[in-house]
Length: 491
Image (cartoon, rainbow, N blue to C red; front, side, top):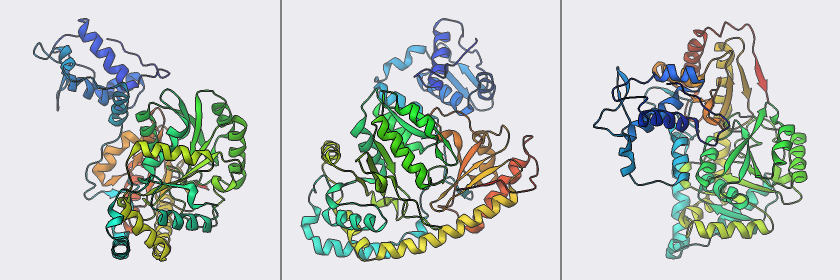
């Protein structure tokens, strides 16, 4: 049978493939026992990622349409496995089906084991200030007593909002306590911010590449992501103008400081131009400042929330990367009617935040423990960043390019030629290195020659070993050759 995919369709590519095979079986064009093309072969024929074909085959196997045997391949199921078998299962909502399609395209990471873990954006547990936070939690429980264990209000712990307002103000972001809404980490914050402006069927502009979990959030809300291409100076402003002019696009999600996955930070002129484009289009901006506390080289440009004079920006903040993810505490900074609207959404989302943790964080911040923790963490990240850049300079072939961030955990590496980093990942894992392939940060999941490398879980020695492994793998590909000089992108 011949298959085709429509990249402009709203239906995910892996579902298009599964639907065509299922239809062929139902129509008798494929019979029980017929062998399907290999994943590699079909991916090459259709010009898609192998993980996309694998997801289609997994969907069909779950429905009983096909059977896969390691070493033999994938075959149409026999008479004992009718195509209609899946109809006995409960019908999932279209939104859930769409989210499952997205999840199946994510790379699977088992326990890193002996691998150098440069794929994760989770701070290394050895860096957590456990003892200092335990003391803060004990003081909070002692001072707050049983009252701290009741439901709290939707805006969150007042003491933490006071502490955060002072912290943001010190960082150059004007913030009042009543302009802050606390939430369960950046994940809930993103969902609340998107729902503030967009409903199912609408679209939100996002940078490409972008944070993969924001794509999952949009899918879960029935909101379509519309890509704005990234350059090494930030999102393409001409493309942004065109996208924001669309009536279906309701907002723009952006990470101007220590961008995930690229690591770059835009300059003040770009930030002003971005805000002007949003104001001309009448579209709000969701600024994700998840790593704003992790700068270790040079003074950062003022945030979009700082430059905003018209109330167009909602800023997200989180302790997950600067402290540890288990606190599940983030915040949204908004102004005017947006605060009231966020509170209404928050009330509809949950009954209360975790007041003991928020009270402990308030103590941790106001006592100076958070500032001391950040000082040590920034020194460690600076040393690891330098080790990563030195290793890339030493081991990458000609044509490779990478970013040189001034803070945060991530570096974006673009490999030469037609190297597909998703195809490279299994071999890298066998050789002892994990990274995040670039396709997972693309709106449509298309193949990418880029990858995100992080310094969150790997120390200097591990970074040097991991990049040496990567360099050896890349140099073995026909597209690469020894490089005589650096090709770093300074940002």
